[in-house]
Image (tube, rainbow, N blue to C red; front, side, top):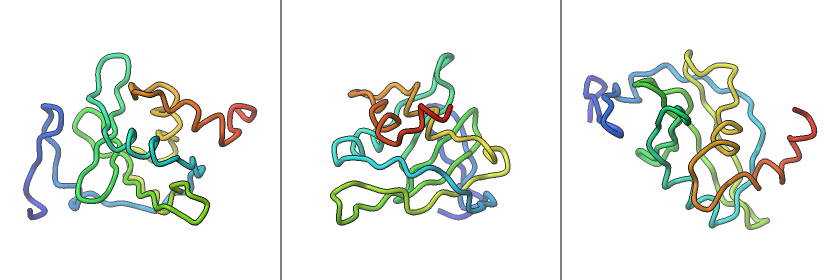
Length: 126
């Protein structure tokens, strides 16, 4: 695949993610169990109520919306047995938005990934 190629995700055309300018961005380390990690990688298509869609492509997890790449994320398993956020990149359109929090709270995961947010202790800070 070259930078000019487009891909179709959930019926929407996206440019090659390598053609997007990505910048490192700090994010809360929402640690995941093995089951939660596999659930996250399955993703789900967006709809009217949940417009941000996680999608795995070429060893990265992306968060997309309406034909735009917003976040580029990588998790790695560590000695504590959990998967931890190791890379969190953002596009210009995704800058400043905690979309991991959004999809963990409102995403269509089966089983739900809301416990990930509770474990991070972020609910007290919202």
